[in-house]
Amino acid sequence: MEEKIVFTDVEFAELGEGRIAYLKRVTTDDLAQRFPGLPPMTPGIEIWALFGAAGEPIVLSDVRAQALAQAHEHELETVMLH
Image (cartoon, rainbow, N blue to C red; front, side):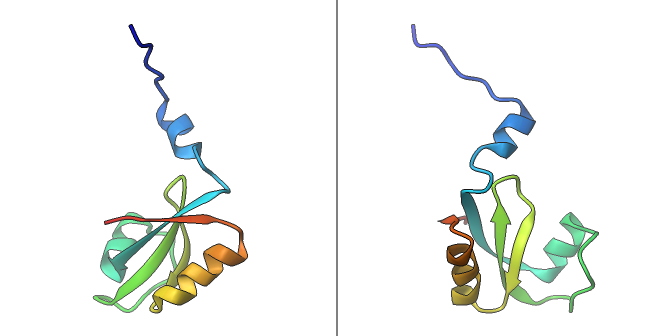
């Protein structure tokens, strides 16, 4: 029988931290709701967000290539989220 590896929520969130970033197209409304500590943003705008492995936003940009360039600059492997 194969043994399952079980991660706590904290362990799972830290998996890939500092190595992996997730790119996703989001609205400023969604970001403001999920991350109330972010600076005010124009409502209803779609932007590209680069999230750290633990789910925190690292880069916000209206240009996908700019968000990817920031990931590359910080030597992060990017994964696209849908």
